[in-house]
Length: 248
Image 1 (cartoon, helix red, strand yellow):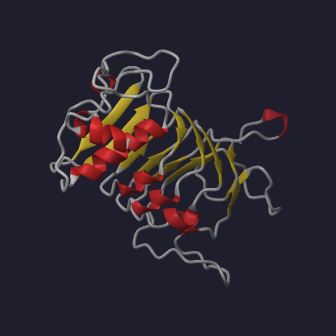
Image 2: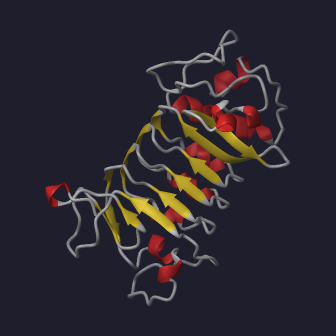
């Protein structure tokens, strides 16, 4: 990504420009998720059937990064996506990419300080959810559903997202752990705002408790330490297989 920015990118960004970091982070996202190499001869309108970033999105084209999006955003058809929205200062506010992405989520995403919506659902992403996402304090919606993510949900970093209204993680069967009613994520829900915490449990200190949508591939809390599954007490919807493949 740095090599592209320094040696290939024809859109000249000043060294001390506020958009320099933003442009670099988006380039890191592109290459971390399987984006094909971009050169001076790249055709940004070409399809790539059967490969990551199948539909053209203009990512890494020599225009402002707020214009890195596919035509499908305007026509509401097919895959693709890109930077859906920027504010008046040309800072990225919303990213939506449903485009056969592969690879891992880069920690650099935490540098997109003004991001409100991040949709990377229905791709083929693996690895863990970066703790650095907790640095995006304005984030209101985080959608990572229908990927191949694993590990635990980083509650201690996501607790910093005081504006988070929606967290969608269903379809990631390898995410495991226990989210009981006293957990930080449950405390971010208005349903659990008045609960009394047992001794030793960390209290959520955010001013708002507006996490109203929390979905995952999970089962209800059983009281037995979970192994290889996610148990969740405050998920608004669980998508998980039980005995005889019954859906809870």
